[in-house]
Length: 363
Image (cartoon, rainbow, N blue to C red):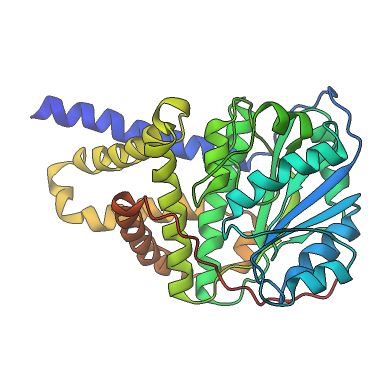
């Protein structure tokens, strides 16, 4: 028993050490190496939208102000004024009826590559996104060095407990994203604020069916995704619990769908190994505790949780969260666990449920 406990201890502390190493590397000032290899013809912004009349102007006007040469809105079964607003602001429009972001992109991307060329660079955004004004200036040296990029993300709205929970979740995710790129590994496509050359889409078809098309394409794509910390896209976070829970449940269903339906286990190290490794690492850490500490496991879990979720925060994130949010985050993560367990048994549900958006900004 003691030998088993010893090996569990090694595994547990190794897991915690790896996580902390990735966080610290992601927080470092170390830069991704740049070497010009590619040139581009145009920047094309692609914005899938379904009934987003309240916010679509945010995305169109900000991408226009950032200097994109073409802005294309994919209008998926829109029954409100989204088409009128998009066309009125000068965006090119494509009408589809999939009720699926993944299928809409699968349909539209080949047409756009054919129209604007394989050497144009195509960026994917959500309808509620706001792109910072100097976005293209920041990503240009990266896309001249790498064929696929994922840019930085941040909250558009920070008021309210639920939006601030996303700051904690995104902080650890984004620090690890940067660390993976610095280590020469592939980062993960994050749904919006990512893009690739037309020749990438031509050679590696975007054909995604899950409710998490970004992760599915990461798994299918044999090229590395490179993280760009300097360019940021802002998006609206849910302000109420149930829309947030449904959104997270959709994410986790997408992960498990990709694992089991798209051969994710064999194709990519970010699927089963990540989930099993995290679960085993945490369990091993707890099992390795000395006997007197067993009664303190809840305290140890909370301390470890606090360390892992507070350490990644940068100066801006620390300014936007409240001191007591880390206590709320502990219980919020219990709902993440509930969503993960539910998703494991319901990953075949691929119906897309819209997350409501209403946060307008002046651009």
